[in-house]
Length: 295
Image (cartoon, rainbow, N blue to C red; front, side, top):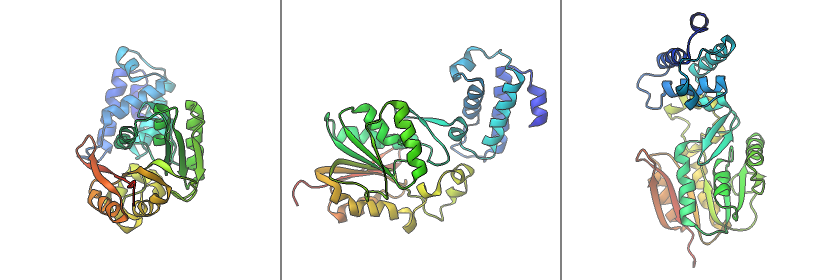
């Protein structure tokens, strides 16, 4: 975009936003329901200016310095090449917390907040033992810890790089009481818990969605699972009862077409009160089950 940069190096904020949104609109797949060129341009220009989106709207006539415009267009090129906006910004909001993110972790997504919502609804008490399996950036664990200071929260992940991101986020948020353990799902846990929550990999290796440039940049270990995307979910369901208090709950995020398979696996393992919940788009994206009080 060198010629564009020269053309717009003395442009206003409003002109830069228009040019940026137009450029992204021409590079993102036509009809992609997740494409948000205008929003992306706003976030990237605000980042270049070290301000918020409100600051852009408050001063659309402002003419940024040429080096700021250059930084903005560099961000646009990275976005046009498929790099997620969150990786460019180095951060992503989730629930009520701001998280640092990197290519070592999945970008936290709004649908995962449903796990947090359900965990808080199922165990409203001030005290609980909770484990977040495959924590990534720490999103679920830290959201729960921020809401429930009295909860004992443990977060596990197989990736040392992901745990480093989660630990940094915990420190930045002052939530250092959250224990971070390296291990495969429940393998590193000791004792029993009132709640087990997880957003494991659930995308099948042959799913064409994996060819989207954004998903190609995210860690495949956290996205892709064998057995049509169900391997990790089934592994967690098999092992969960050994780490659940009687009456405790297992909450799992999954793909929009996997609720029946996940619910069936929970029932077959002996869980009760099995039910699925829809995200804001109306898709069944998480299923929960309660380990019975008496067996």
